[in-house]
Image (cartoon, rainbow, N blue to C red; front, side):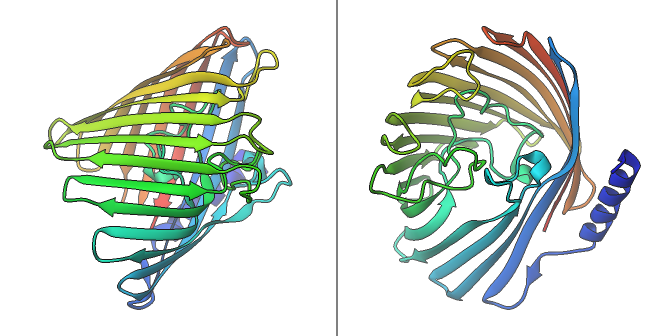
Length: 340
């Protein structure tokens, strides 16, 4: 398909979606969702440039509330085969969220099913992210994705929330693009916990920990620590920072065969709102791996909200590598985001 046809298709999709709104069938059933499409160009050094022009992903979610205390959520997630699909077999659609939550009314909420990891400042969902590409996740990929199990979240008061989860595995099966845990407890198990504090005006502090025991897909025990904070400076600007440390993972893009590696990822974001519709994120991020490669990434990513549901985003990033097959890389992208 040539670029003109793809552009026409994306424009038609945006026009159709912008006419939509949040779908509330009745007091018990509602639907929400999002889709994202982008053009991305990368020029590594050394190496030839490459690009992609795709609908990157989409999600349709149904929420059922049969009583005020019980909520059930199901979502279908689409990722095209051109972007890696959602499984090694090339499947493009998967059941992503599938859980039931019960609110006891005392501050405690119990959840069982398939749900997203607590860990990570950056979002799994493109419309909630700051940029087109993530600041982190390049080598050790410290942020887990979806898994199955049970979790408990407790609101202590207006400023303090904590939670814990027992899951089939903290990290996904290889090749599943963070959409599946390993589906069993016999050979390994995962766990997570977190504490969030908002007792200081305009400041949010979040601390979390994750653990994956040795099993079929994790050749070693894996431990990950995550801390991030965000501070709203004024009505126009916000700053955020994160540090993630992962011990025991296998490096994803090795120079040589490497196992039981460890390293840290970090990021610093600054957001400035130029108008009510137009804002930009400025970011610096990096990673250090004990056995070798590292990088520093400098990014700028402006976003313009055309409507409450439809946005366009751009990004430029320069990545400088150390002890890696690349010296550096330039990234340029443009993205259309719709949510309802």
